Length: 62
Image 1 (cartoon, rainbow, N blue to C red):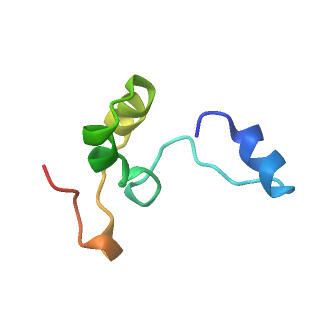
Image 2 (image 1 turned 90 degrees about the vertical axis):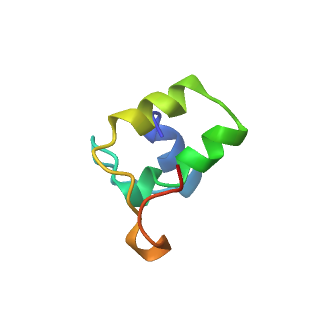
């Protein structure tokens, strides 16, 4: 998620990324981090203003 060029190269087309991650983009991370701790991903998750994913029912479980 930090290396935007990796996604563009894989997709074969430029990708649009915002500087601030939304719940739709990073809301999956809290449950994943409980199973697979990762300092870089935890920092991205902590920087997100919200982790709510409305179409998945809202906030991830605590």
